[in-house]
Length: 221
Image 1 (cartoon, rainbow, N blue to C red):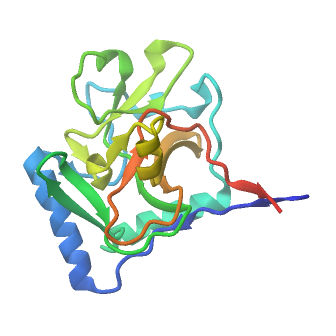
Image 2 (image 1 turned 90 degrees about the horizontal axis):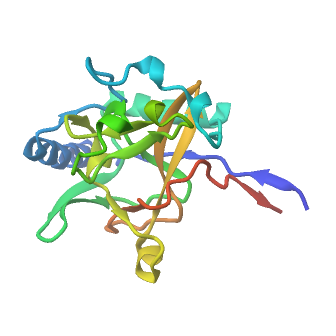
């Protein structure tokens, strides 16, 4: 047997520009309602953690380095966003769950759906926050150096994707995204990656209780 590497895929935007506008409008509505300003990158604000604090080398258990090829794929996703070619997602208001996100077209397994972004801050400054959308960015041996992503003031569509407990049978069935932290050019980044094919109309859920340091991008053939 030999190992064959599984490459990450860029998201596939909807071809119809009017449909893309509708998708972006749904996100804008959710951002406005939550008081969040759109950003597709990690943000570093005065009084919070500086960018120099985001060093993947500080991760206490080590962090998988995103390959050159997959980094190019991530950069392609960012360029598409800059051109207004957003991932095919629709933000929908659910009466019970609040704002949620659904696939607006078929999404293939291993697709980079979005990056989890927001303001970067030290975990110790956020331990008393009651928000449920904070995401671990860096887990260091020195707790004072651990970082989190806080998408309350700045964020993107990831802000509205629901986390789910994948330790239950229902959670495992619903989960269709994997939350993965990568070392990208020496900095920590969090990507939401499809862990199976996702049909149009399916609601998106990531594993909030089991974010991974790496994604199984190799399989035996």
